[in-house]
Length: 327
Image (cartoon, rainbow, N blue to C red):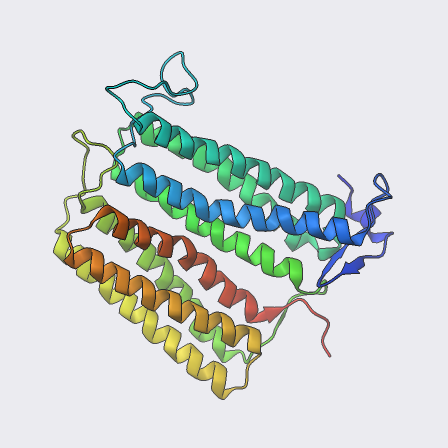
């Protein structure tokens, strides 16, 4: 890995919207190859961060949470699962989720490699952000062990889920930063929009937290056996969750109005409209699953919406600022 001091001696080279530093060890690798590999690493990391939410949801919805009774081995003495009539596919579903964590770790390491070799000119903030996927994935693996050891207790399952959207959000900022400029960060919209975005992001996180509480009271515990559930009224906690979504929508609509009236940059308006569309779709799926008795496929669709919710909030926030040179 090259140090920032060495990186300062080299001039970034551009391919499309991505700038990378020349590599002294791989002199035959031009800016096109370096840019493509950097994009693959950072896009792959984001996709896996969202994918791990879906694979974890598949574990829960198929009742495979304790398909592997041990950690890091699937069963004591066996690292990989074995097919038996009694266990069925459950060990393979659970082990598949663990395997995706390994794939995510590979992309997290790749993000660090491309950052320190080719992207260190983007500044200290970018380099620090590049550590987040690897540190977060390691933390998730450790918490996953406690999830198994404590028999899917919702008090541990909920934080295990909530870390993934946060990692997805920070990975989205990393991705936006890859394609943006290389200067210092500056505000790209009127300052009053930050007064709307900060509570919007806070309420968005509250929506996710309440969503985990709703899940913790519902029927999909992650295992067919006797698993602890939260002692909330499912109807009451669901309504509280819905109220938080209504508040989030109100803040988002207010932000869209200000974005258009102030003539803010097109990138910010586009991101906000996409977030509105995703939130409305997620709300529609939420009502469908509630009134149809939480069928697995519909719940999985709601999980898909949850996987993109936090990254899209982060996308909006990242478009309120820019790293491009001031004109």
